[in-house]
Image 1 (cartoon, rainbow, N blue to C red):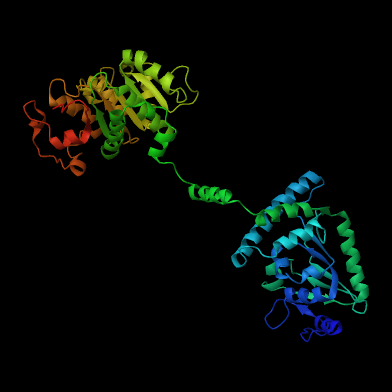
Image 2 (image 1 turned 120 degrees about the vertical axis):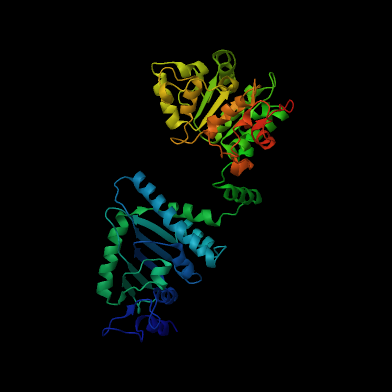
Length: 476
């Protein structure tokens, strides 16, 4: 019976080019996997030289390779190295990359990787040994089969097929069988010489392969599922507020609601008013805005406050509650927060240039005690600026959205001091005097009534509702 099998394997009816026995994975010819399967029945050992090695090739021989006493696999290294440490790092990277990829592909048809545990056991007992030749680039492909029966002897298959599933089953390859005892002996000598100087990596291969067959506890499976589910998940604002914010847990419920409404209104209109009365915590809502905008949204924020409030309220609170943000002396070295006094808008020296940079770089401007900007004042000589340009118009220039869009938050307990025009002037800091600014969002069109803002006229209810956050009373 063995002699009949040897005749099939060595004297195939598929012959091309005279007496050559060709293995090319063609439909009408021989595949590499069929050739090795038949030799598993006849041989006692395999010596395999390959540029690449995949576990899938052994899985394709499952039930057959187990009958062999020894399999030696000599594979190539993609780089050369004279040190063991560098070699092992290379092998781990290469094995992890190539073996992991091939094993993941094998899971499509074999989800539980049946047959892999037997391969791991064979690697551990050294029934299968793996070495890497790293002295030069190794791209050889040869399969030397040592028959159990002396009458058959050793033979070899030499060509282009790597010891991988595609190389043995799918790719168009060209391999020819070498049957001459003298020629096979020369091939064996070549293999042994390279095997002796190659680096032992069987344990490294075991480490890579074992990860794919290790049994996982239900908790590990659950944790991995959660990890994959949340991979790349961008934390939402509400998640950030409840898990990372320092200010949000300190706020009272009405302050949290006011902060949330401010963000919503400003997102819709480009500006919003916080009009809580004195002592109701506008500063803490402002701190919450700063923390959210700087840390969660990565915005550049500029804060303007009266000099007294800046020194006695804002800077101490920023140091205490948000020291990691910086923006004040003694704060963080790198900060997206800049703090100024209202009066800084009038100063000369470096300040005009600094404010020009704010116009180019700032994303958000927060103004405390915003009613200080209820009157436009002097626009400057011919409206073009200059030393006599009012503080209002200097802020107006800084908020120029044509250079960089900005969101404006105005904090004041008294948005209207004397007349409705007070409020209008503050609104125009972000509406830019566009009479149709609220036409789309609030349905307030330009009705060509210039007396709309006169004291005897009531402010349209929709504009009040759209821009004000007032927790005390209906301020109008």
